[in-house]
Length: 481
Image (tube, rainbow, N blue to C red; front, side, top):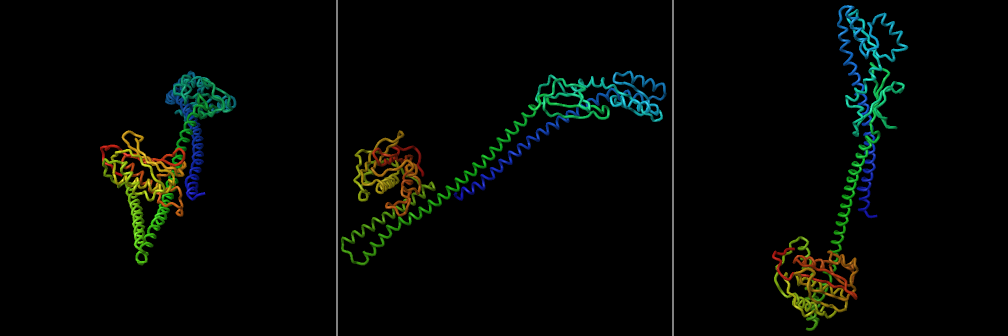
């Protein structure tokens, strides 16, 4: 496993997995928190129901008690007690004291638990005025109090609608709800406190679990989507970094290989030039041998010049500083001149069509493209026939020249990379054919810089066809690399 992949797994994939597991746990925890929050809301609603009933009781009872304890004579007090006993919510009213305490003790075992009391202090020797309440009357009024304050409304079908019931401490049902509470659902509960000590109220959601399951589902869905987006972004960023690292490593290896290849390419002509120069200086060669040595030096010097020119053009294209001086000329004539120049190196006699083909391009750049194409034919076309013919380009306004050989050809995978920089079909420095791997890349870059193109396709019967396309007329804009 490569180092980059280990870095990705440990630095990106593992944290992403941990983040996913932690996110799922957090989402589940928050979902449970939503359930707890809904239960707290139900308990709050129950407490509100209790407060509403208390308020109702005190609103009707407290004013009369306050009035009664202000009486200053016994007759007035008895008259106030009689008025209290006449109220529908009162079972019995009396002044406390020893007699009152005896009465209360006698009633405690049978009725006190069911007869809640309220009291106020009077001016008569500090004795309390006690009112025993009528539970059934208060119970009969509760449903209206609940609905008046926004609870247990049968017409309310909203998601947060509630239903309310009243029970005793032993869970005996005192006041049934307006509709049957959902089975197996949570509820909030609150006691009625000192006024009705044996009673409690329960508040349910009208739609049971569905009332807050919608919130939980929506929360989990949105949380899952956000978590997925976060993890996907993290993984995508990691993969992008991994691709960038691999590309940087590949570029570094390609450049290292390029330097090694250039060293190999420079070594051969320099060795030849050095050997021929040494022989010429020793004055042991006759006139013909000197001429051949001079021709070898000239040939290898030209080879060095082409190598250097290729490196310069490649750097200019990479930096986007290559400019073109375009003019109209006969491409066929330039092709024939290039073939004549390379004739001694070509492994076969090229067949060049007699057609004319006028293009609008940079003559020097086109000449360099042709030299690179012919040099490629020298290396890979073999000893078969090399046919050069002209025609229309794939798009209107383009002229084309085709170089068709009968060499070994290229596989589909090789055709995809044949114009990549530093790429060679034989990637070893000990191959029989030389080459830096930038010739065809430069040729395509120059062609596209002049609004043309350079492509390759397989030839029926074996071999390849390289096609150079160039504009036939000026495009109306200056061309830059």
